Image (cartoon, rainbow, N blue to C red; front, top):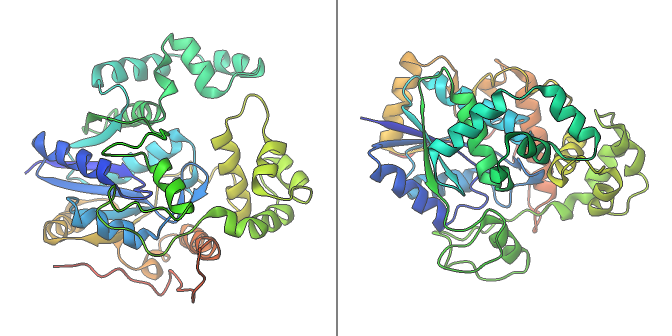
Length: 359
């Protein structure tokens, strides 16, 4: 039995993800484990729908086991996001390959770029960023390849860099639509689907199941601005301008500098609101919370508990005994997701929530 890992957000889970899962199985991988972001995601946003819904939908459409990538790792740079996901998968002790989408679809080219980045002198990147280039722009200039213009290529390269020494092989599936494309075809990008959900449009043609509970960050922007104004963060510009901005988009514009990407600014603002400080992603994830599994997934869990080196559980309360801080950040992110809901309801604490595993 060959097992593939996937690091994902499924924000929301759509037909393109089904295509990726099928291609992974067609490549000879019998079992699939997904490590998925929870209620805050890497682009500096709240997830459009609840992590439990996304995990259940993934299992209903070809994934065997879904575990949560904890906060703060889900709300971090591509490098830290990749490092954390690979760390979890490698400590399961049963993963043969990491399967990921990319714009280029060429593992050899991605590997060559990963090797080139590893050989860059950091001072060269720093000098180019001082001249106004963003990190991806500076890196692309130094390696002489525009491959980093693709968001999934960027993550793919970071995955490959972090896989070194783990024994896990990289496997890529070429995307048939770009990461932030507004094109509408048989499949559409997650960004376009989020736009459609905001507009109240029908997305049933593009997803296996339409989410009912939705969250959009603008619904909680006053809360986020307030939290950012009263808490210290690693970027002092956030606290400085949070009291002046009338919206999140205005705050982003005030905080942004020419050598920083918009995605990084969004992440830093949300990190400030949640009280996340630098260095919190430097240590490897202390645990992985089980979100959904089928019968094969339950068998995989048995292997992980027997020979893996990372604690897993459906209970955040149980996992908080391993890291109270990471569990508390998960709870904060969940509360923020609740306040961003399109339709308010009663809040359910993550500490009392346990995910039921289907058999």
